[in-house]
Image (cartoon, rainbow, N blue to C red; front, side):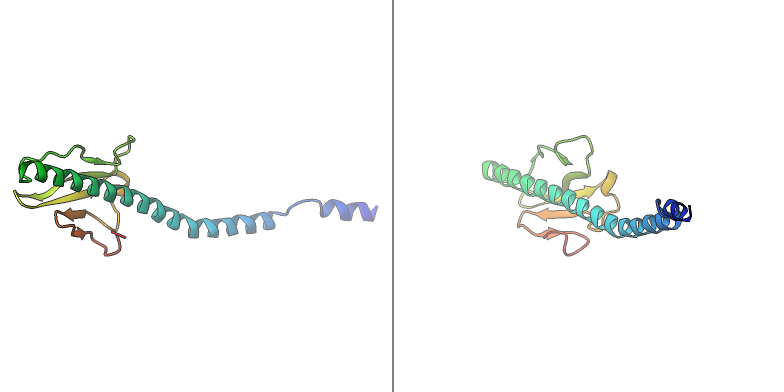
Length: 135
């Protein structure tokens, strides 16, 4: 009879063991989640940068055809181009007959991004609040 009672006590998981597992999972999640968020933000920034480069090519075609950037209209003004959740506004920060600066302004889920506004000029100069944003 004593043998049966010993087996019954060892047949389950104690509350302490369960709490230790939950605590370990919490620690792992608290370490992994910020890395995941930064990875998603990097992907969103890369999409906005690709759109700025595409708009820059459009601007160079306008200059080739007209001899001036004046009067150029951007074919799209948000990034990403597909999908409902737009994360950047794309537009001109400055424009003249011989130069332009395109700008991607974060919005919605990217509002507090460390890179802030990203820019691209007609001579290929890239700008952002953080130096490693245009990698």
